[in-house]
Amino acid sequence: MVWLSAGPGRTLAAVPTFRRPPMSSTITYTVTGMSCGHCESSVSKELSALAGVTEVSADAKAGTVTVSAAAPLDEEQVRAAVDEAGYELVGRAA
Image 1 (cartoon, rainbow, N blue to C red):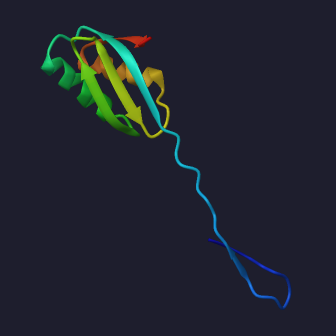
Image 2: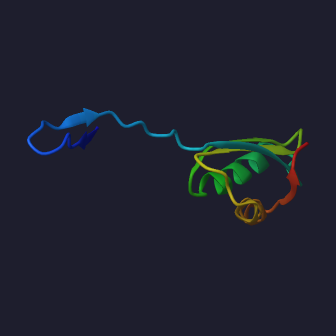
């Protein structure tokens, strides 16, 4: 609530405020080198450590990882996290 003055000698008026929901982002990336559940777990762990990440789903068979975050992520941070796990981020999946 925001309180607005109605002028001298008048009562204050309460006006509700509305918050814009935070921007969220879900992007699927192509990752090479994953071949098993351990690979999926390693990539997921590294990506989950990035600030704002809310969910990660890696699929070794498809060679993809889907990342949901509270706000859009910097692709270079995503690339660095995948690299740290020992795999290569090719780019966004089509």
